[in-house]
Length: 103
Ligand SMILES: [Zn+2]
Image 1 (cartoon, rainbow, N blue to C red):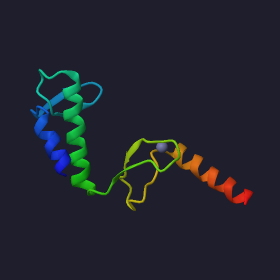
Image 2: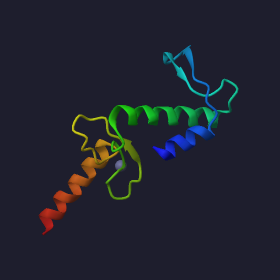
Image 3: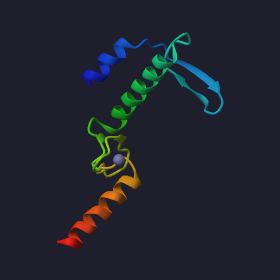
Image 4: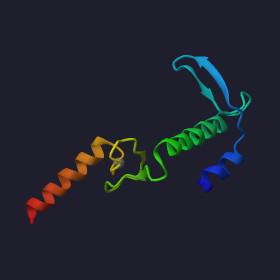
């Protein structure tokens, strides 16, 4: 929470409505004059803040698969997500199955 609040103070914000393809009506969070990196920062911070407000502070994590460091947002009902993707979950399950069969 403190990290996100601190970052939101550093990035110029100017929330406003926008209506263009491919999204239709939606929010922009950075001032229209912002450079692209600051627009990405503002959008990412606001979406992370909304995720935390809606799902709590424990719903983000780093993928548990070997060799993968992607992060994920867990929006499932149970809140037990461990992997960034089905591909990482399947790869980990197959490796565990093979390890069990070897022993
Ligand atoms: Zn992964």
